[in-house]
Length: 479
Image (cartoon, rainbow, N blue to C red; front, top):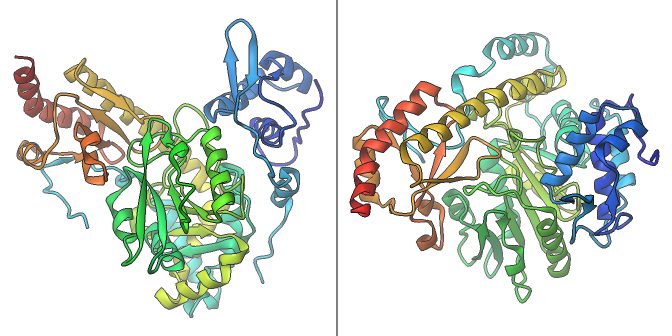
């Protein structure tokens, strides 16, 4: 079983090389649905690697739906994983060997509240010492060009480093020229709306999806077409083939707010839909670095670079105050997007870009993410344990595999404005899923609970405050 080739000198983790080999062969149809693959022990022996490396690669393939286990029989290729007409991934993957030439609305709640606001990282653990040291180096010794007007697409140093980082960690395939540095993900989304939406245009969005997205995409004359979401993300079987949308907006690696991971079968359906209707896919990858049971799920952009517009941000990884995001664009959109960025704010601040480039290039970002992932896992587990302790069996938890929030569903409680006000009087703030839903009836019993910026003591106290308000209601319902 030596046909899986690995390169120990490439800098790409071995588990990732094994995973990408199988993923490529499956998507291109060289490994067909129902075909059995080697056991982890067989493959590890064949490649002379630790079995744990192969196990990690297989777990990633399981997580994304490429393979399935059959009890007593082994591991097999799953149905619906072949993507017809896929560009040769061997050619696209060669980009990782290229050396890029860089020469060429929410108010803050009262301090006594315990706020389960989602999407906020641990603000007290921002790496200030490292950042300030790098900032001093950049301000004292950085290029003179950083003091002047920059280019709308962003600094070449950051775009080169970021392209390599995203290829290694997220399976994104791009050249630095395809990157557009934005002043936060909010600006990236605003540029998308300006690129595509006008009178008589259509856009497909998930339902539910953050209400800010709905607001930004509600351009006069534009029709938003909501597609329901289940525990696996957008229900792609419901995509309307009789419409011609400009794009489909999705959060496939961690659906916001419900937390589902879009499996490969639905990703294939969505790409086929984009090809058939001629639309783009806007992939918002806002916090998937923090996946707790396996490495981050690979991007959709790596499957169809010419059809997917990829949005990323450093607000969840590092700090919202950095206001640093980015777009990865198909070649056909680069020129127009740069012009729009220039007309919006000329360019994102140069010094911050240079500091961030060094932070990534010197390995600080990888170490920070690894550290925070352990912390957030503990905080997530603390919140889940506390909720179950106080509310079981009256609470159902979901969407907790990734990110800085999950969903708590109380089937007997509707989180209306009156109840939320009562909770705030108890000193705890939660966020109803209904706020983000177009079909609100399906979401009235669910709340979004963020845990990234709360200590374990605060989490437990917050759940106690929640229990003091909700348990009487649950008892009343039982009575």
